[in-house]
Length: 420
Ligand SMILES: Cc1cc2nc3c(=O)[nH]c(=O)nc-3n(C[C@H](O)[C@H](O)[C@H](O)COP(=O)(O)OP(=O)(O)OC[C@H]3O[C@@H](n4cnc5c(N)ncnc54)[C@H](O)[C@@H]3O)c2cc1C
Image 1: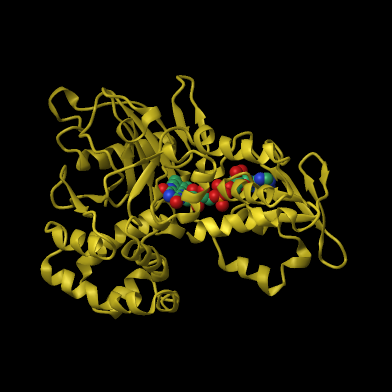
Image 2: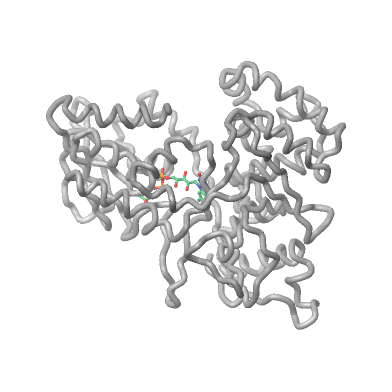
């Protein structure tokens, strides 16, 4: 309801004044969504995207065989009201393939086995309570009892309690509150790596609690959906069409080189690589923080607001596609690998309609942490694709011991091709 009201407000602004030309830097989901709502409000956005493909982290390319290679494995949670509203407004809700409401974890002590937290069709928070109590394989009753009390203030005080935990890492919060260490290895490592691609000793507890709070309080909050096909066509294209229909513009291959500001510190123009100047009434940055730090005009760098950027650092992550010569154990869900090298993964030949293949699996995996800043003692970013794929396959031999491994009869499942 709130999300619908918010976007209805943009439409009401249409008659509110003369249209403005707004330059939006970056054609990822943020930039495109921003431009969509600016257009709804009667303005004329012009999106400047550096690359020749839409979507930023949700972009994808076709290889020489016509297979899609995605920048990142993506799922959508029920707890994304604005995103759901956007899908509805674009008339593409049917492109979200909702999966059974469960969370699937690989079992650490039982390689090849998976355990699920099943959310029954009851209202929140009962469905999550039932999911936690119903799973007997990951946490003992005593561990569940030790985990609950430190999280109770979150239920009572909500976001103010969550924000107050921001100075603590997940591991520090756990230890401070006497949570058993196994909660870390069983749950928090998987959550931290899935939410932010880093280990729990480096992630603010506020991040984990924010997600948990949404999942506990929203009946469908933790239910996941996969897009039914490649992201540029199935999600970004309808946004661009909407923007263009309302008089906006989306330019690919338009990399911003610098932001020029006047004596009063206000933006005078954007200058693209190649020299073209873009002058607009308003300017929006929708680029990742590391890029924004490079674009930040000298005159702004000491302003308290922008100086906060110094505290922000992007976390690198590696996304991998492995195309196999046969079908692996069929799981129609996002899986938490709980492996030291990998975060979440999914068999996209099962989970995604466009990539469907009944005979051969295509695993899309998030490889994290992959650098020192994220908690890895190996700088995987400096390794070759072959080394990364080899390490991933070795890890998969552990996760799929009956299916992957050179020692298996016939040599097990083979990787036909890969993309990193
Ligand atoms: C591997 C991976 C998996 C993920 N999985 C999930 C998930 O399952 N669920 C989820 O909710 N989120 C997920 N995320 C996070 C999600 O992808 C991001 O939060 C979201 O896509 C960010 O969108 P954005 O528009 O803010 O940034 P971006 O997508 O980074 O877009 C920024 C755009 O700016 C462009 N740009 C950069 N420099 C310039 C310049 N100088 N001039 C013009 N344009 C420029 C870039 O090319 C890019 O297109 C995942 C991220 C990764 C990396």
